[in-house]
Length: 253
Ligand code: PGA
Image (cartoon, rainbow, N blue to C red; front, top):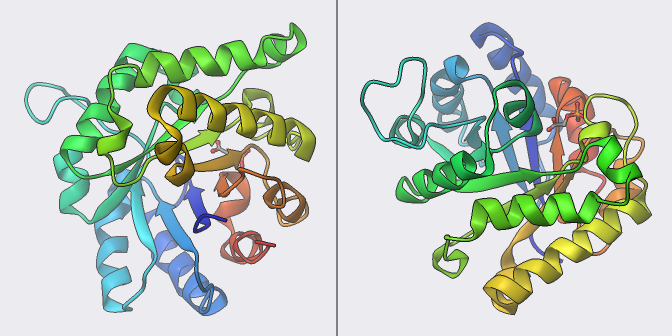
């Protein structure tokens, strides 16, 4: 198995004060999580304080941005560049989350440019893909995911990347309490692995970590993580509680 990776996507939750309080609990609970990468994606405003607190505690937990702009600087009111994320210590960035696609109108072309920007700033991209319920019900789940992969990654030489992460997050499972079954997740992860191997080569596929996301909880994580090609999880709601997030991290089989 690849080195497991767990990403806490807090979305628009937790002030700086709450972030520091959370870290105190997490450092206590998840002291010896072993051979696992643990990444926290707080709101932009908390990144700097969290980065400082992590290094003061000699913690190996890492930071991620929840989004970035495809440009590096300039007249882009309200945007955050990869340079700024790198400056506060981010190693990862989440790109193309379904909430960004749906609520903020991000297209595959924009997402492709964001991936290029993340590479320029040495941030490991966590590309989110996933189908809606009507797409799944119409038997088009894989077509949707393949289009998203193709749209975002066509121009990008993944072989040049040190690490690349894809998070399969069925839209109908995000924040709904309704996770994909282990079999559904296994099928999709297998197809994503095959697609990466056929387009970018087997070696790239073998080092690209694939995360499952969508209503992951301590109650369902173990069974999901047992499936082939599920190398970790992108966790929203359950990651807001440091104890629950730790239980999920510990459920690696
Ligand atoms: P959820 O969110 O765990 O609350 O379903 C996952 C995500 O949106 O990344």
